Image (cartoon, rainbow, N blue to C red; front, side, top):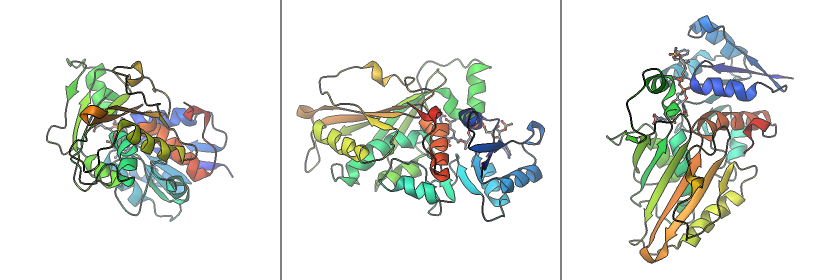
Length: 317
Ligand SMILES: NC(=O)C1=CN([C@@H]2O[C@H](COP(=O)(O)OP(=O)(O)OC[C@H]3O[C@@H](n4cnc5c(N)ncnc54)[C@H](OP(=O)(O)O)[C@@H]3O)[C@@H](O)[C@H]2O)C=CC1
Ligand SMILES: CC(=O)N[C@@H](CCC(=O)OP(=O)(O)O)C(=O)O
């Protein structure tokens, strides 16, 4: 049987990208809403209930509404919004997070796709906390730069149509209450909220994030090699991982591999470890596409897991 997929919010930034990634698939049928009816509740309800899997690419409130509109007890859901990411009834859609996470996603009815920013932090920090290298109460700072497509249609219009008069580097979220903080805290295993300071750049797509680590106050100060080994070991144990770990070289001071745009159009997330052991300082840096592994790539990866099919070509690195 060919699975029926409905993308609620197909015309938006994430929805459109998922549509494109599924365009050549013969193992599924995308059922689309007529553009003029895309906010018509009755028509959405009909299609949501006709789908085997619904992918919600909507603002939080509209996503919650879609879930309420499904009353058939069978339609499975992948939600791209923030609405259900720390809800215990939803599987978190970061397949490489744990050895059994892909199986949890494959067997779930409800899957919450991760936020773009949390993935870089969870990928780098969760293995370190799990291995006891970084304590769960460590005061963590996380920052990075994202292309403006991360802000959806509205931000894209500001940058493109209205021509935002912004430099390449514009910090935001400066009340430190970004909507991604609960998800970051929960899935890293941290016992206190990380200080998250995001930056948006005057480029469309791609992101580079950094977790700088002051290690000198720890009871046991890890070396860069130990940090790298813990992260590399974790991902070496994950089947079909789209998270790659770059080789560790303590002599690297600058590398084009950290260009936020290098993974655009792919589902790859690369982690890099940098360290100065004499100073007891390190950083774990992640590079990925905010619209790829950060959104539509992860959604298609989760869809494939739920359908029990191998990763699609469009997800290749
Ligand atoms: N962009 C990114 O990098 C990422 C986005 N996400 C999340 O994915 C979701 C979608 O984001 P994104 O694609 O960027 O946002 P966009 O604003 O680009 O798209 C959202 C789409 O939903 C439509 N929409 C809004 N309200 C309703 C409604 N009540 N019924 C039906 N359709 C509606 C919008 O229509 P209209 O424009 O006409 O209002 C628009 O087409 C959000 O929850 C976002 O937080 C997650 C990870 C990364
Ligand atoms: C540049 C920019 O504004 N980025 C968005 C993140 C987008 C994302 O990850 O999506 P969710 O909102 O679904 O989590 C932000 O910081 O809010």
